[in-house]
Image (cartoon, rainbow, N blue to C red):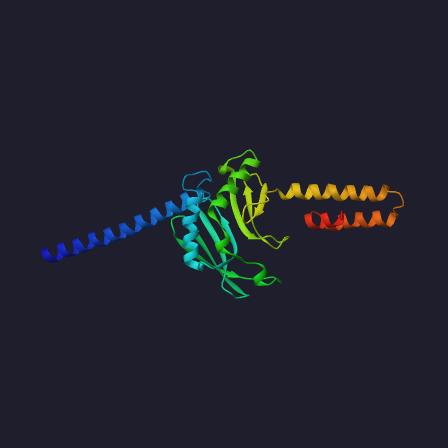
Length: 238
């Protein structure tokens, strides 16, 4: 009877220990997730750092393949949000990758009139060092630091149709560049310059000798229709 009581006691202690282990493990996992979500861009473990991002991209490659095609990759200081092509026009692969390597998978349904091949880019073309330099350069343009960078998005630019990088700051400002880091610019400034150029073209057409009112009106209509589309505004002034 005593032996039986001791055995039950030992089993109870073992069960409590196992429960405690999984409880502690869950708590540690929760703490790590919180730390990752609250990580600042300038932290040593931030994914804005080239070495940290490169390690994370290795895990992405393991998931989608070295020759994988991405629809969009969003880089936060503590985690990545990945949307990749599976070759299907209807569904893709989406997952959240924590900086510690933990993966949370999500469903991804593709919608819209465009073709898949026009909306994907090669993972192999994404360079961690370029992303890191671009984050720092964009922050510098705003007299800010990496702590002021919210996230970075790699995707096909809807205007140019080419893959590019967009750096978003916490002040809601945005800077963008080609996937190789070239051509860093601010979309708002680009639109303003194009709008000013088009407006000057309208004024020139209206005041030039022999210019008809119809030409000036057509230019004005073109500018109105272009809105803030930089390429369309530039086309108006040609």
